[in-house]
Length: 234
Image (cartoon, rainbow, N blue to C red; front, top):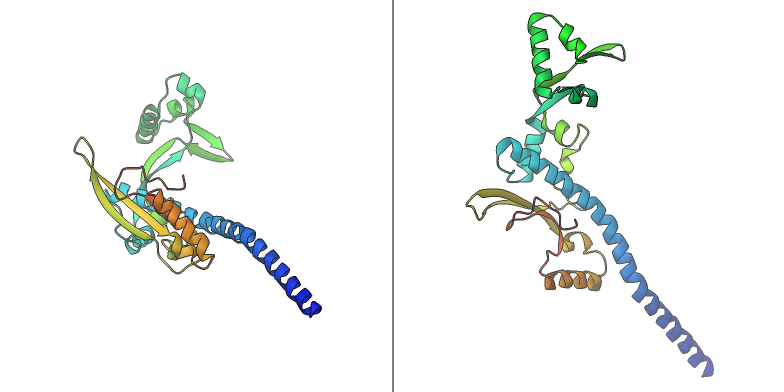
């Protein structure tokens, strides 16, 4: 009988040690996993913000959905300035401006006389090549300019580590002076990317954010206020 009690006591002690360990280990594991997943999610939200800002610059509205945004990035274009050479401090101190430099180069191209441009340092030899001060407005592929040529558009809008898309919507708010400002929001709740972890830890996290009247997840932008497209992690 004594041996039975000893065995039960050992089991009880082991159970207590395990329960204590889990009570400490569970929140640590939850937090570490959350931080790792959110690092990737935040990067994706920043890419969405970059793409939406560029889209609005070209269309004066935000893309209504990710399909529209991806299609524009793949097939659309953006206006950019092709730049060759930068004015030095010495040139600036002597009164040279980009506008003056452009006019000098335009005149040289029209007349074929490059003496003034060369004298002002607007034409130089660089790595064995003749480089001319240039400020040309050109159209380039949207994806290459906004996110980089190697960016995988199929993942734009998809929450990393899941098959779920971010929630995204657009709106318009009126300022005190009566001006309508177009805004957008992309978001994902904690439950979409943390539901496979400790339910109690997840519930506590959601409850805490809800009590603070904050969005229980990650988001960029807003549908109710002008916040300069800020992320709620910033």
